[in-house]
Length: 105
Image (cartoon, rainbow, N blue to C red):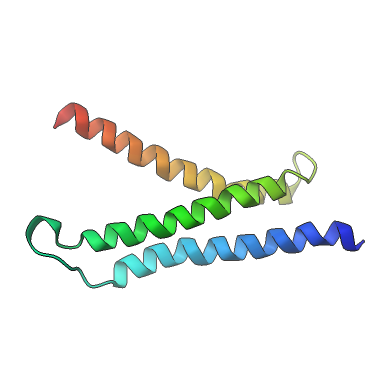
């Protein structure tokens, strides 16, 4: 029984850390005062957001790896994939925006 519950506790801790990192990326970037002058004013907010999103993305990969131990179609396995897919969606959005800017700029 202890062997079966260990990955569940590990997954719960990773999901909790993911929620904290994901939330802090938004709250920290929103609440940070903008620094710099001119064109680069406020770029610190973008760096703060993307840095914490990178941490959340790494935690998302870890939750996906731990969650793959459960049977296909189970709720735990589906929940463990959510952080990974959100990180992948953000990455796809950033790359899409970059591609769009390169074509139209």
